[in-house]
Amino acid sequence: MKFPRRTFLQLAVGAAALPALPRIARAQAYPSRPVRIIVGFPAGGATDIQARLMGQWLSDRLGQQFIIENRAGASGNIGTEAVAKAPADGYTLLQIVTPNAINAALYSNLNFDFSRDIVPIVCSARLAYVVVVHPSLPITTIPELIAYAKANPGKINYGSAGSGTPQNISAELFKMMAGVNLVHVPYRGGAPATTDLVGGHIQAIFAPVSEAIEHIKAGKLRPLGVTTTSRLDVLPDVPTVADFVPGYEASGFAGVGAPKGTPPEIIQMLNKELNAGLADPKIKARIVELGGTVLGGSPAEFGTILTDAIDKWAKVIKFAGIKVE
Image (cartoon, rainbow, N blue to C red; front, side, top):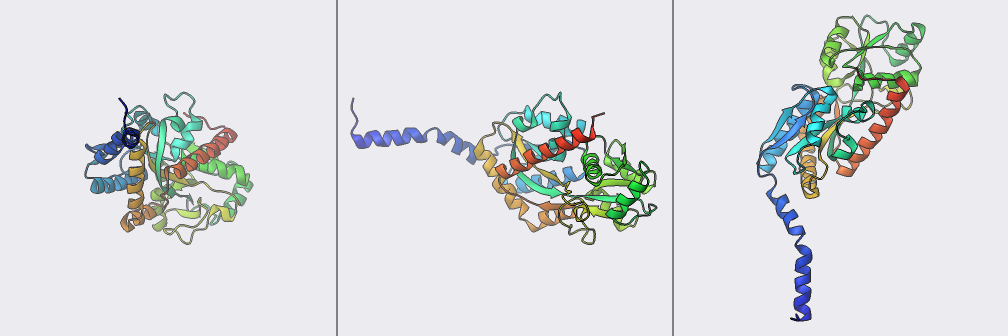
């Protein structure tokens, strides 16, 4: 049977469009049931707060619940593995944070490959740390910290949430670039480290702004510098570490990802909606309160941020000889 040329062309065009139809329908139908956002850390911290901010936004915009599920443990690896092994259908997402980039270089026996198994959706924010010391320490600036540390090698103990955490590697990068000897005291979490700093049991922390700012306002901790390349709106009078140690930068990040193989149309939909949320004044203000700088952008841009962070922290981990406990 022969078709007229016009009929044949119409059939060919229709056939070419057929593979796209299920994808379009799938995107239009998404989400048709609740979506989980896995957070690899306990409830109440900055990571959890940001996930809930964006989850509520997506719930309101897309008409389905985006439920935050905390799967804490192993510096975020437990939650990340759960997402890496979840169906790639858009119904399980991951709150991506700095430890994901650190862990890629720190752990050699994981049951997943973060770079391979998780695809980025959007980077919500850059997150700053602040160098804080106990007021009893006779220093008020980063240059004075460097001078004091060189005059008293091994006498300054700095705390962290544990080996390989952002606080640890931020301090180790500072040690490497400033040529000083600070002694690492790992804790099981940032809160007990901060408590001991306030109590004068240790002398310094490269702390997340969200964990230190109330103590700074109360005069219990003294801020010396922020780790980002520019000053923070919440700490406008605190200079950057890079003002005194050229090239120093140790910011973190927060964003959202999904299992590899998640349909690209769903990735693009979520990227669009999350970028809209990041433009909302209330969400922006809350992120700033947490010591963040709102970013947004494309999945590819977030991918570049992740790749750069993995490479950077792998070098610091190797130089400092950081091992997981």
